[in-house]
Length: 233
Image (tube, one colour):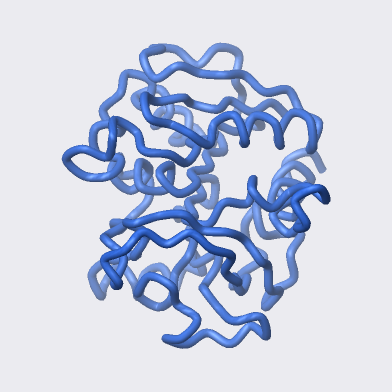
């Protein structure tokens, strides 16, 4: 399985993601520049990753300008063909702005930037990225965002629930989901979702920052291992 990591002006988690996918998970990784107009040699069994950061300085709206980068036309075509796409933090914002995922990421309820470890409760195993994680399993993954509050209209939220598209909700260490365990005010405590075709994934927490023993946390590695195992088996 090959991974392509798209680099936008202002991306700052691209190197972390490249390191984890290549050196830790052990797969081929290709850097993709935002001005590229082709995805070379990627098949539907590969994955394009939109990393975290502050693409285009977060001007206009987070992810809005990046969603119009030349490479995004190809990413959208790739996703529509069934290829896997993962967006983390700013990448999640870009996926929503580009229409690959529903909803939007608004400013945190506290109106402050939040950088800390949080807990996520897995909501479904019906996706490649969560197939290897038991439903109800709790992961400790860091967040680092000012605009991470997931929002969608009532119809969209109901659709996400009915179609089992919610991947993760914020919880406490015991897996309890309530207002106290929701760091940014996301509706339904949503921390990550997928599309209806279950090949596009977006999440605000950073699994690449929790994927090595040297960091004291390998919970994020479970997502990458689940994705690669699901695709390759």
